[in-house]
Image (tube, rainbow, N blue to C red; front, side):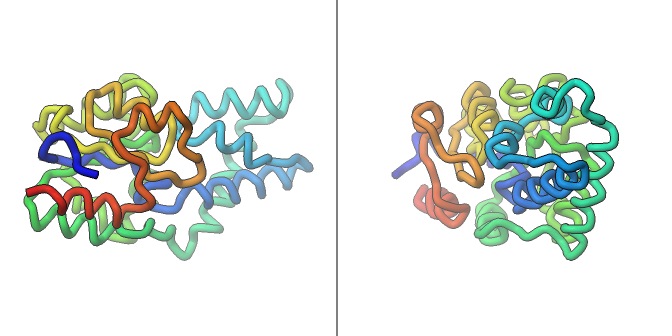
Length: 221
């Protein structure tokens, strides 16, 4: 598979693409629910992937009921997350090799994530990855959130590359929708969410991992 245009920059999602945080968050939510005598189904969690917290909070309250203590839930999830991730959150396969390839080709790169800056520091800081990106568009910098294209458009503006010349890498459905709406060459690298017919239509390619993405870039002249 060849990309339709030369890649002049790459815009990355973070959770589930660069770092294996989705599984950690699920375990934290399951532990928090269990502490209240509740269950956190995987299918419910999948509905939250790729959403900003204010949207996912609404879904959680709808599931558990209007008497659900959201503030206590948030605190418990964060506590369990920190406990589980105390030893560090693992990088996804191929991250370092892909960044090395971008360095070798002199290609700028940015992150467009639904997570806040604190989460970015927590997940990427220990791996010393933040300094390997030219821009980080965290939740605080976005006027509208995925599936709106705003995060990706802001990322493209920050690295001064037209969106159509950017390769966007996403693992979530809303992320793919956002990147495609921004006009970027979009590749889905699935994590917890399987690709659907809609994803196959919006994305140029469904990659097994970031090693495969690196091969796509290296196949360019």
